[in-house]
Image 1 (cartoon, rainbow, N blue to C red):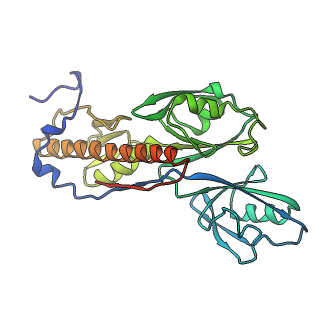
Image 2: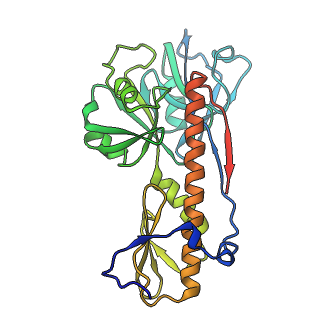
Image 3: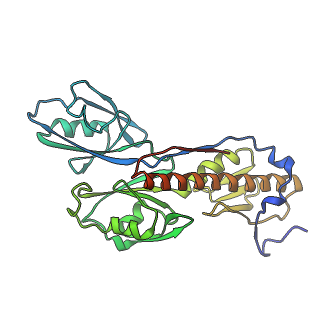
Length: 304
């Protein structure tokens, strides 16, 4: 008997999914996660008209170093083609054009901070001046070997969502909430390598949920909420499923839904949970290895 809307809702169980329904979801999602390390390089631009020998391009929301000439001031530094530019002389730059202009108009010491290694596609980069935020505005907790954001307010709340996973602060991989809080609480100027800007890398569970739900649910007659946390039937608008931050898919209603559709939904729920857990396992392994190797990025590939 199908449960009524006002009855207790449940989470789909993996062992309840018919094998025939599982075969109807032929998708392949690959998770290649790296934890990038922060590189800080400095050079001296003696004259205003001197060229530094670097070319930056915009790729998505990132500023990427696309070319380094044979006469570059940074030729023998740790800077590498493919690095993501973060700051120039402790200033954020909005795009490649602004970065080039800032560098061109600078004379004297020129300090560049970059990410080397490709960061997760579901990650977000948050950069805040250390004198502009209060570290107590973000509550953190240890869950399954990773540091999760429990609550964020103030400037943190504008950039970080509850449930996000904190990956690194100033290039230091974080595996515990205590370590993350220590790094966020550093006063401005206490660490010359950290600079005046806190470089915070977070992993968005909402972005992961959206990515996986789009792939697995593309054949379901659903309309999704903006953050892909709920799916409803196209024609009736009946809310059918809710996706939680732990990857579990909750059944909101089965009233009037035929057996074939229920099988498809349960297949989606099982596949979603499996993919979600593989992604989190890959992320956890990358964090552990990055911390072990002193933030050296090591790839981990998983697919579902």
